[in-house]
Amino acid sequence: MLLLWSLSISEPTHFLGRGSHGMRKTIPYAVSNYVELVDDNGYFVDKTHYVAKLERIKNPVFLRPRRFGKSLWCRILEMYYSVNHVDDFERLFGDTYIGQNPTGRQNSYIVLHFDFSKIDPGHSLDDLESSFSHSCNLRMRTVVGQAQIWFQDRIEIDLKTKAWQNLDLILSTIAQYGLPPLYVIIDEYDNFANHLITTHQDRFYGQLTADDSFLRTFFKVLKEGRKTGVIANVFITGVLPMTIEELASSFNIATYLTLDPEFESMLGFTQPEVDHLLDDIYQDYAIDPSTRNEVNELIKNQYDGYHFVSFDGETLYNSTILLYFLRDFTRFKQIPEFLTDLNLRTDLSWIKRLTGRNPANTENLLTQLTNDNSILYNRTHLTSKFTTSQFFEPDFYPISFFYLGMLTRQDQFVMKLPNLNMRQIFVEYFNEFHNIDSSACYADMMRSFIANPDIERLFSDYWTHYVSQLPEVIFQQVNENFYRTTFYALCSHYLSGWFSFNVERSYPKGKSDLEFVGKYHEKFAGLRWVIEFKYYSNSDFKRLFSTSLAAFEVQEADTVQIGGYVDGLRKEYPEAQIAQFVIYCVGNQGFRVFKI
Image (cartoon, rainbow, N blue to C red; front, side, top):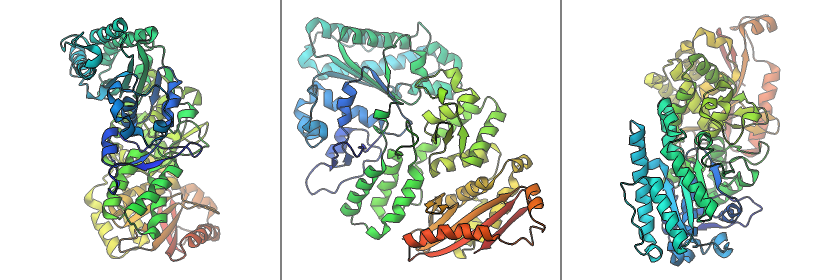
């Protein structure tokens, strides 16, 4: 996992692209090796001041969703502390904050860096223990071999021995001969445990976390090493807090930083960091600066919006997925057609597992998030750790999705979908749950639209092909956001080669519902279509208007409202060709589209 490290504005900031002089900087998408990033002259926002902050924390546990850069950070810590990389320190860290302000503990430890994502759960507890021991033993044998100047053939790591026994052997040798202490890093600590949960292997998971399990014994050895001082510190990353909670009695010395405001921005990009990054990219790759505003608003809609601690502070971008966009953007100097990293879509398996025990719960959750893009939560549940049984309780769904990166904090009472990426994913699962066809049957309507763009015809086709498939019960719950979100999701799936989209874009007079933005390098460049959605239930429409839907006319208040948005848009983009539409949806009766 990868991250270009983000700095808060108050911290010393260095924006670096290090490597051979004269080399064009690279976009380090999917690079989790810090040495590789440096050698390839990758863009790098220095945030190594967090190294010093972490030194004040005993046994830190820091959880973040997948693809938020945890593995790269682990690798940075390894390179900084390892006794084996004294000669590399200047090359790796010379231009960084921590290189110029070292803590005094640099290159002081034998670093034992485990990656639990490599462990295969197999089909039984014996299979899992065998894979666990083999993976850990290989890593320990490598570390002992690299530190032979210290170990001097005093020990040999037997691959057939249990992992906790070899770890205990290393600790005993360090203590006996006064060797440099151990610094332990565990990346993806819960990876194989999460696999057991998502594949319905509850009994298997129970055995893994039982009092006499090999995993508990392994963590007991770590705890003992910290007690004696042979282990200088243990840094643990992962996604979910459940496994560390199940192992609490074996490792009850952890300090949870996941919800600590001091460390909220340790992973992810802040807006100033993204601005600096784009400044460099536009200059280095000679990209037309007139495209900058369009790119800014697109990436903010797609990738920004995460609040892990403070809901009223600065939002964070999903860094790795932003790099996915920037990789193709720098190659072709155009907005890529596909904006969502396919690796993110695997998260749908979690939704199925989380709610699959009760289809009614699944339906309620999906309908809630598709209708409102938000859900209430109990903030007392938002703790650093909770158990597996709580993870599957409906009251904990918002909390579970928060840790998985699907929801983020809106305020003290509401969780929301953080960005358009997540809105699209939840609409896809809503469609799948209700067996709504969203495949190639829409190709003809989209092809017709590209040949002859007509918003009224496009929405009519959406109503005919998509809305007509909805179960009758859905119409008792839908609202204007439902139509906006599902229409957007369908259009973005097929029209993203020509358009980008804004949803709820802010203006001085409010937020627009939906905007089609012609990409600057395609045939609709310069076009901006602003759409306002209005929804009435069948009974409300009958009560409020003494006319049929066919004879209904656009309401003056609605034209004034959308006109306010368009005024703001014209000030930002005075050269844009702007069209504005109001779409009325009435229960399951139908719709009217008005071009203003």
